Every structure is written in structure tokens, then in C-alpha cells.
Amino acid sequence: MRIEKAGVAVGAIVEHVDVTSLSDQEFADIRRAFLDHGTLFFRDQKLTPEDHIAFAKRWGAIDLNRFFKRREGYPEIAEVLKEPDQQLNIGGGWHTDHSYDQAPAMGSILYALEIPPSGGDTLFAGMAAAYDALDDGMKDRIKDLKARHGNAHVFGEESAYRKAIGDRYTNADQAGQTAIHPVVLAHPETGVKGLYVNPGFTLEIVDMDPDEGQALLQQLYDHIMQDRFHYRHQWREGDLAMWDNRSTWHYALNDYHGHRRYLNRITIEGVALA
Ligand code: SIN
Image (cartoon, rainbow, N blue to C red; front, top):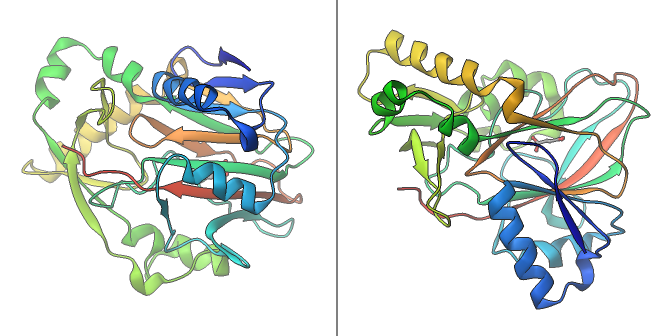
């Protein structure tokens, strides 16, 4: 097995390993690399849905996604699909999964089944590197702040995005969760500090004037959106990506109209964030 850093701020490529037959030592090395790099990309995997589920269960309990259409016969697997005649993709903006939950998902494991001939890359951003690069004044300003996250504007009945994306999202009536988390998160496993707000689901800074709060969020987003904190993954069929929702953002680019892109995602439960 070879694990090599992919981006300066986030990501590592894992090669020469089959995730269906990892030894305990290999799994421990992979877990360490996951915490160190925030996102891992396993090349050349040949997974059945059962293999994907078995690998996911090594990390923890599976979070049954409420809103994504599930793969038939496999409720654990959420479909990330765009057909050639569809315009909108899933995850086509910077976000981190499930930040609207009280105990946000620990990570997501995405397996590439069909990839367009070109395009369809995913961007990842490293929240610890972005936090480290803030100046001391900003670190001091945000150190005790909390933010409210929510999902109705994405998955709810009134969401224009959900209406436009059609039956790839389900259970609009179950949307509406909100949760409050620290803006600066000490990672629950490593203690490393990172930014924990995202444009997809963060609604407001708690106990701050709304305009001031939105301006602060935008300032943080503009900072994180600098290329120096990103890694761009160019997918190959058989790639398996696994990201840590507590320390990364991701963004699925939508630049492959007229082609099919189909991936399967399993999400792992996490813990409440303090
Ligand atoms: C997602 O946000 O889970 C989708 C990522 C991707 O399709 O690359």
C-alpha cells in the first residue's frame, strides 16, 4: 500500500490496496492518514454494493441518508447521479455534509461507477490549513463564536433547488433540522482546530447582528475559497473517495452536460461537536 499526499492543504492518494481485504494494520494506517489528510482517494477498487457497505461499517454505524434517493435494494447507499438530460448536479456548491445535524456525519465514502469522458471533478478544501492561515485578529474574533446550520433551503418543500433536482431527492417533508456548532472546531478525534462553517448549510452566526454575521461568514468563505487550500480530484471509474466532514469542504463541479455521472455514497455517523 502506498499513501501519498495529494494537495498541500487536503487529500492523499492511496494505491496498491484493495479495501475489501485490508489487514488490521493497513486499516489502522488508513485511519491515521484519513485524520491527517482529511480526504483519501483509493484508486482502482472493484466494489459490489456489499463490499462498499462492509468497508463503511469498519468506520462506524451507517447514517441512512434521509434526502438522497437510495440505491434499490441497498438503503445504506445514496445515489449521486446526473443523467445526460439533467442540468443540475448534486453537491454543486461548496459544503460539508450534514452540518445541520446535532451530531453531524463523521465522513462520507463515495464510489465512482460512471464518470463522464471529461469534467465532473470534485474540489476539496482543508479547514485546518484555512484556519491556520487566518491572522491573529480574526482568530481572536471568531474563537468563541457559534453558528446555526440548517437544511430546509436545500432539501425542504419550498426549496427551488430541490424542486429543480426532481426525484433524486426525497422526503422533503422531513427537512427542517437545525443545529448550532462552534465556528472554530477542535476536531473530535485529533483536537486540531479548523473552521466549521460552510456556504451550503450555515445559516447565521449566533448572537450577532444578521448583517454583521453574514459579512463575517462571507469573509471566512472568501478566505477558504482560495486555491491554496484546495485539491481537485479528477475521477476515474473505480475510485473510492472518503472525506472527513469535520475537517473538509467539497464541491462537485457541474461541467459535463450531456453525459452521465453516477456514484454511490455511504455516510458514516458522527458525534456531537463541542
Ligand atoms: C456530494 O456532495 O456528496 C457529491 C460529491 C460528488 O459528486 O463528487
